[in-house]
Image (cartoon, helix red, strand yellow):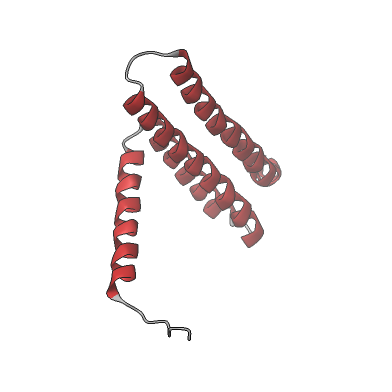
Length: 128
């Protein structure tokens, strides 16, 4: 016989705790100077998009590009923190792990810049 599904407070409390950890993680992320640069850039992109009155499809690709960069920065920060924890002394593999994580952010940032150019340059060209 299959037991009926019941709801308990424990899963809800667990989800609330997980959300709290994620919000705390955002705070940790935003203490990183590079993350602040990415957030400032995203705010500038948002302001330019509002000024140019972009269409919904343009907002979608810009939002995805901005989220990709910030997500990559979050993963980069997490990798750097873990590497510093497990390997406090200099080691070539620790350096390589950090450099590869930073390269991931660079790749995402370059792709986001291409997306931004694709969205904004034709609209700005008309204004010149």
